[in-house]
Length: 208
Image 1 (cartoon, rainbow, N blue to C red):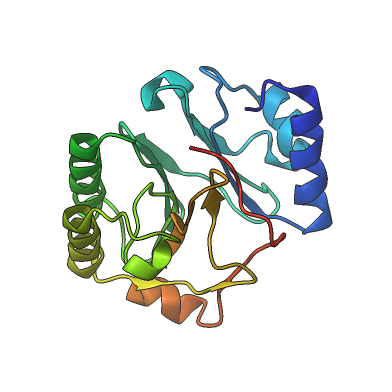
Image 2: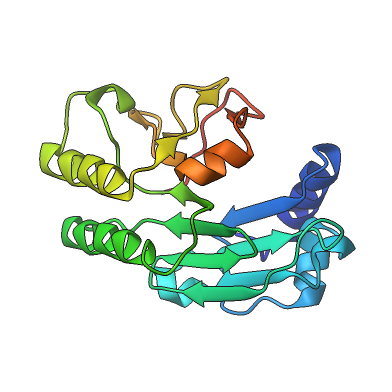
């Protein structure tokens, strides 16, 4: 939740410390985001180039996608129920739902985005789904949804960016899962062939 001043400062410090040029923040818990807010979250260089998904569209979640104006310009943005997509080259940030039927509808939404983006596409976020049994620390698995997720990735013909420094990305103290991921199209991969994900901390988050 970015309605907390201390969390806003943490985000801004992290963006500065890591020379961030593209920022995707999930669970903002904000219905409206303005340039003043973005300056507090990330810094002034992000305040003119951003798009957001209101929190009430993701049942209390919310997504902010902002870019450093010295490097990028957002020329178009499209919001769906669980995702936001922007271009110069295309990037989609998702925040997956909780319910089983909603997850099926969410994957259909992700597949539909493919028809609206260009050939250089990055898809990332909290999918609230796992691809493989090894993505969960226990054996309570919904194999139907796992298969739906794998089928979606195959349909999109996307490559997953490898995550270094952490096996799981979410924990509720009893179960750990790998539900935060990034995928790229072939042409995006050719543009940035050495790209990967690096965990800034070994600790998993407790978002849900």
